[in-house]
Image (cartoon, rainbow, N blue to C red; front, side):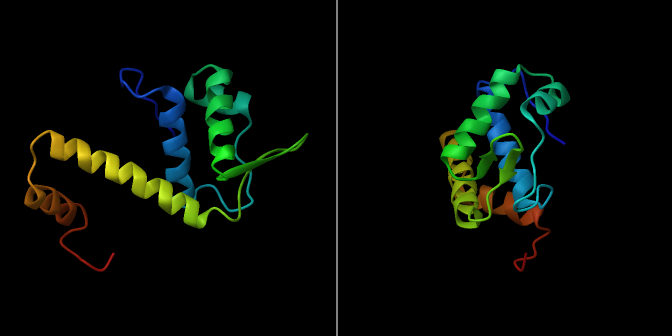
Length: 122
């Protein structure tokens, strides 16, 4: 489910944060549902447990997840607006990068329309 690009300039913990947010948006992780333990997640994606702990800490500070001592880490139930905000920030960063590469607005819109099949309803 989660894939990390070790060749990316983006730190692994940030990649992990983004992927967790994506999975929450997609409903893979339910509201008030558990996330994998730090050790389990680290083994699953092949990274150091400290990297996972850092990603979880960042997400907790952003109120996307919360920790119940002795029980685990859970998806926060008051995170819908925060998740949307973080998703929009991520999208904005990508759009700014595309603009920096010289892509025109029309080209980006065409890419979006292709992705959604030209359907403006979803």
